[in-house]
Image 1: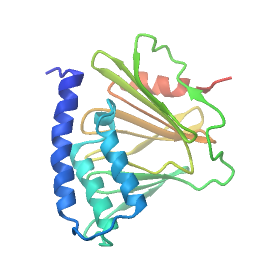
Image 2: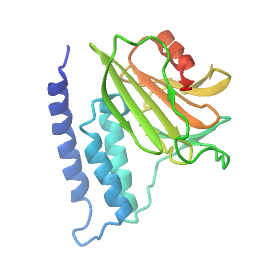
Image 3: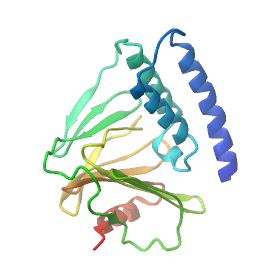
Image 4: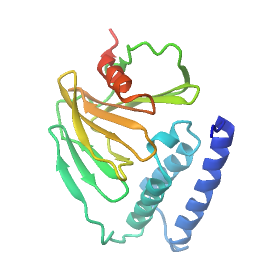
Length: 224
C-alpha cells in the first residue's frame, strides 16, 4: 500500500504524540529538567516532522529512546537489559533487543567541525532533495524518488553518537573504499551503511537495492 507524504506525516505525528504523553506522565511533576534533557526532548519533537524519520526510527526504537532519556533525567538506573558489545576497528557497537548504540573510536586528530564536504557522486539526478540541513558539525540530505528514499549524512566523530534500529538485524562489515563499514538491514527493509572515512562519519540509509546502495557508498567523495 502506498502512503502519501502528508498521510505519513499525520500518522507519524499521531503515533508520537501518545508516546510523548505517556513518557512525560512517568516523570514526577516537581522534577526540574536539566538544559541537556530539554535540548534532547526538543530534538526528538522536531525530528518527528522530518521526512526521513521513518528510515532511522521505528516505534520500538522511539519508545526506547524516550524511556532512556526520561530515566536518565530522573536518575533511575536502566535494569535488565543485556548489551552485547561488538568491537569493530572504527566503532564500538552496543546491541540491545530493539536497537544498537554506535560510537566511533576516539580520534583526537579528527576535525571537530566540517572543514571538508563529502557528497554522493553516483548518478542520482532523478532523485529530488526534499530536505537538507547543515551546521558546523553535520550535514543531512534526504533524497526521494517515488517510494525510494536515500538518506545521506556526514558528521564529525566528536559529535557522532547514535542509536540505530537493529531489531532482528545481523550487523555485518563490508569494505567501502578501504574502510570497514557497519552494514545491516532493519526490519523495515532499509539498508544501512556507516563508516569512518578517516576524518568524518558517513552514513547512508535507503530502501534502494543492496548493490546500488553499496555503489552509492563507494561513490562518496570529497568536494574539491
